[in-house]
Structures are given as C-alpha cells and as structure tokens.
Length: 389
Image 1 (cartoon, helix red, strand yellow):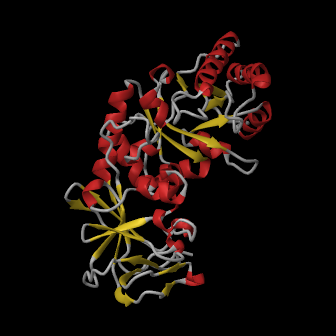
Image 2: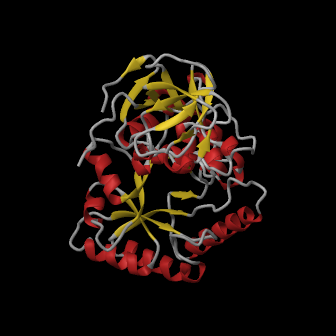
C-alpha cells in the first residue's frame, strides 16, 4: 500500500545534476559509462535517474534484479541494460524478450537460463560475473573454466551470446589496499581463460565509482558508476573531488519552537538533558522516513547528526522518533515554517549526506538510499520543476 505523504516534507532531486555527473564521469573514465540505477536509483528514482543518465552520455544502464530492469522497459527506457541478481523464480525469458543482459555465476544458472529459453529463435544476451576476491556473487576461480565452457557451448547452440565478463572490487574506496591489485590481476586471469574457451565478449568491466575515478588501469571497456552519478564521493578522504554535484536535497518545515530549562530532558528514554536554558525545534521526519535512529547517541551527543535552519547547523537532541526529531536551536527562535535542510548539496545551506554518514557511522550510499518513507519526491531540472510524484 502506498504511504500517504507526510505533510510538506520532501526529497528534491535535481535531474540536471545527474546529467552533469554522468557527463563528467564519462569524460573522466574515457570509456563507456554503465549508469547503475538499482534500488530506485539509490533513492533518487530509478526511471527518472535512468533517463537523466542517458541524456548525460551514459551508454548502458544497470539494475540489480530482472524486475527492476523490466520496470525500466515498461516505462519506455531503451538501450543496453544489465542486471545481476536472479533467483529460481526470475523470468529469464521475459528478460531475453526485453533485450536485457542477465548475469550468470554458475553452470546451474546457465542451465536454468537455457531451459527458460527453449524454443526461442533469437539468442539471448548474457554476461558472466567472476568472483575475483569480493567473495559475494560471481563464479569462484575454481569454477571459471567450467562456467566458460558451458557459456561457450550455449553460444555454439545459438541459445545466447556472451556480451560481457565482469567482476566487482571489494576495496576500491581504499586505493592503497592490496586487494585492488590482486583483484585486477585475477580479473585479467579470468579474461585470458575466457578467451582460451573461445569467448569474445564486447564488454569487460570491473571498475565501480571509486575505481572509475581513482584506478585508470581497471577501466577496461566500461565503468559502472552508481553513487558517483548521484553526486556523492565514493571514496571520502581520498581526493576524489572531480566536480560531482549532489543531486538530492531533503527538506522539511520547522513545525514548533519551544523553550527548555536546564535539566529538561528530550524524547524517548531521556537520552539528552539540557545543561542550560535553550530552545528546541520540532522537525516532522523520523525513522519512518529513513532517518537513522542512531543519528543521536547518548554516549556521543557532540557527534549527533545536524540539520540546517536559517544558515546554521542545528544538532539532533534525543531519540529519533518514527515521525519526528527534535533539534537544538541554541536559544534562537526561527519562525515556525522555516525551511529545514536535512541534507543536500553545499548550496542548500545544510549538512551533506556524507556529514550524516559520518555522524551515523555508515556510508553516504545508505543515507540516500534509505531516505523516503512518507516523503514526497519532487524533480527539478535547473530552474524548472517537474510534477511531484
């Protein structure tokens, strides 16, 4: 069931920023850009982000699941499209009919795809993922030869065409990590073995956002960029500032201002107590909208996440509730109705998604992807506003 909006709290997504980021990443990498729009475009909206990325120069799109990929096709989004997570219930035939490249990790998966394609005249498009050290999805090294042989046999039988071979870094956001060299070499080993098996994929890709920016040797035939396309740094602290523009601003109104005396405590569990007279404000967003409940911790109140009001940073005080948070106004009395910037780009006048990530002990990916709930999402394009969804 769709959640009704929570008043005027909203997520504003700048499509011009996504376009510009895609263009910048394409220019930086110098090879085709695979724009990753899984998980509803990392919270930015899958269909809208996909269109903006293509307009910015991305040649490919990528999702996690077949269902996401089919939703893009249903929305009229065309062009090369890769997905990489399937189950025994996945509709491989529908994916093939929609021109979607589906990833396979094992002989068993290839056999399942072959069964689903029985009687189909045109070869499907598949890509093979190899595990080079992430130890997550992908064929382990011991299975590479068997997987490549089965994939080649399927090509010879006319079932499919192997359009790509790929893998994924574990530590690309730490450029000096020894795993990066090991994984890149393992990927090259896999490519050599695939060639020996007779496979000639059009696309070999390894680099994610961080590697696309920081590791030129890993760019191969394409780079897969997710978080960087939305304007967030994939490797904070590693000098990756190339001019990316954050596309998301989360904002809400200030709905109440009240006085506190020294000794007054705030929110569930009274985790914070005022040590002096102050004022606090009520902001109508909470963990129901994806605000992390650990944005405030009793043991580290000085590290609490902040919001922006009237050009000042205002720290969260006390437990984050389902529908609201309390912030310390430090004795100020901004008018009720004032705009609260939960996070956004520097021009918005509040903290960034990265600031929130650091306050919550997580990564900026999680901050933007989890935000939503009852918030309205609105799209802007420079100065033009698109209809609210």
